[in-house]
Image (cartoon, rainbow, N blue to C red; front, side, top):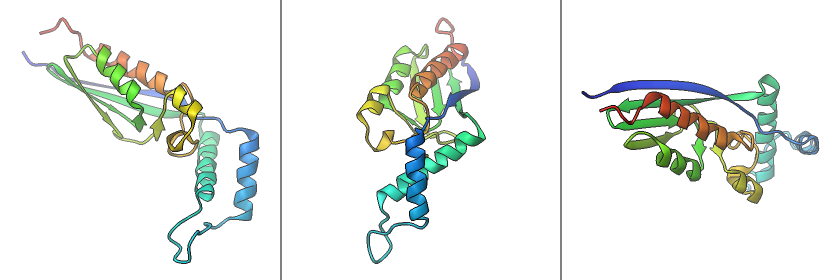
Length: 166
């Protein structure tokens, strides 16, 4: 007999912390440049530092409202198939670990489901740096965020699916 079931959980994942030096530098930069700094006469290209400073300011304001991001994970079971939805874009290492350890025969991961927590990088990627790891609205979760999301997803799958069922 086919099984149809679903579960959802919300994990409180802490936001990334910004250093007081970074906050001060951003405040000084934005005070000096309250409007976009255009790189061209057509006003089509904005200076990246202006964008980054504003994204970090947005992250700081979010942290002032709430210390953690309510990260939702959803799973829908259709017989031997589980569709797992997570917010944001978790790095592929977590997606593969979830698939490899899933009790379901087939696990389909869907990101950017019902919200956007931005990129959710590995600790290794955070140490290397790069666009996806820069703190801001596109990468706002703490360094343990990916591990917390992975553990939460695996726990949800286990609660939803027992491999001995037929």
